[in-house]
Image (tube, rainbow, N blue to C red; front, top):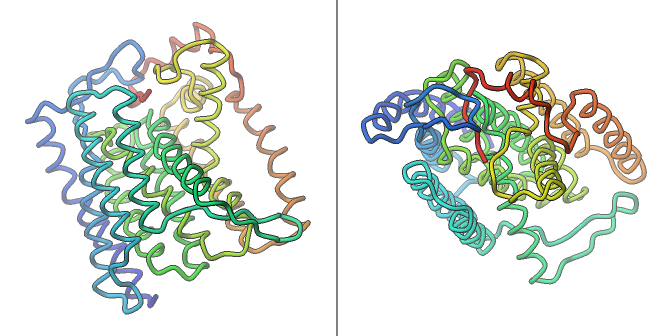
Length: 365
């Protein structure tokens, strides 16, 4: 893609998201679609407008449209149609959830349908690469569908889980989105580059309104959309690269994936429902240890950026070096997370839990 074809989607999405965010905020308040803090919420600010994801969606759509109009090598493809249709379905789900509050099973069902649309349009994980010999194994169709559905739905909800402090999911999504855009560019994917730039610009345009102290929340509308688009970007960017198919996107998305995995293990160990909200996520523990919402969010940004830089390095190494490097990354990651105090599966003590209730952001289940 030419430089102009890259700059315009980024600029258009940024401007559209920045302009529409105040409009969305006023509309959300007028419609009564606002946050209602409860005993598990970090935020204690009632009537904070939700639906910020609509502004992100507007910026994303405008940016992708500008990319299609300008790039000679980017046309409206079947995959883009699947991304837009699935994304629209996810946004509609988020709006309903922000407005009425839906149960876990209805939300999961709609996410599976959106994932199926994306898979049918060409987004799929259909092979695995040996890190040492670079040999690839193809998956049977049924395993491709199951594995890709789990990936899309898992990442969609992982981003939703980290949306617990002002600006957290927005900034993390922007960092991961920018990384996956670079990977898509390395893979020679105009669609991935255009969508990635549009998402990156939209999130940057929304972030000034969402960073602490936030004036609007993403809501499920935005968090689910960001997760859905990132999951497809990861598949698009690694689709043509001869590398560890799962490793690169998993490294870029390591922080939300780790948070989700630890949440599942913690709830299974404590015998609590998997979909019940708690206040033991990574951002909660960082908030307790740092004592400041901004400090916790910036620490989260830094850790995410580190993983994203590691992911980019994996696109340039092969064979036994990749396997050794991955082993070192795993060891250092475990040590880092242990030092940050986020690896514990046990609940935080009552004192730390009380310290979490500050004017910091929005809790998600």
